[in-house]
Image (tube, rainbow, N blue to C red; front, top):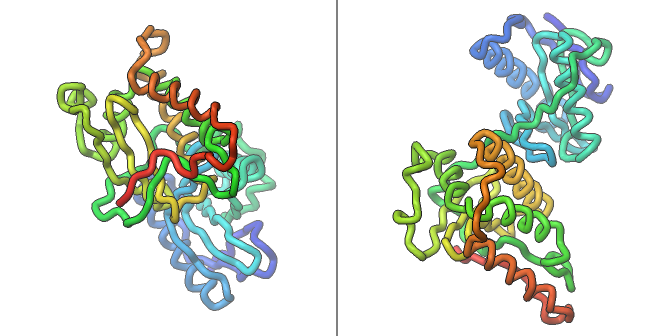
Length: 304
């Protein structure tokens, strides 16, 4: 039996495994991770530590991080990462996780490996957060309830002074004239279309299209599109933390940045779209609301 080295709290049980196959081949990596997860779940169950879930996604300010195993201890939740091959690449990956967690929170990484990764000089530390997709999928049975683009969580809170407003303002500026193409980008990711050209202005009427989604971390979202108001995200108000709402919008902005670069549309002059004009006028009206008592409690509400 091989005892894995780790930086987990000292009171956690030791993790011993029978055999590790030293290979980065996808099928071998999957087998190693399965063996590790099964071993940890068996050991931790006897020690008062709870294995929450495996192969989960975590949205951060820099993108989405894939987490092999999440556990709950008396002092909180941890993210477990298993490295069958202890080398400079593994060390660099783990240091990147640590830096991401220290900088933005939402991550508490712990490593398990055949050697102490903290004693290995790492390769160049690069971002390990993914921003090439939204990690959304179509939801066939979305939970009932109230969805909204934004909602107040405290008395007197106002949309146009919130971080969410700033994110939407950036989003509308980025999408000005490109709203339909961005909507097609989402439809393509969830498998409703194969190519972007399958959606155009003639296929969509003036009505609003609403599609229920399941976002990363299992959060219920509705994406809506109309020519008049553009592309919008509505989050389940009872199941979405405001922090997640802003992180998802930021993820979409990161995704748009990659998409615009890859499709070579930077620098193309476009007329202001009806959606951008609507958003700009909405901002003007909101700024005229100086009384807290008349402030809007929710924006872009959708009832399911």
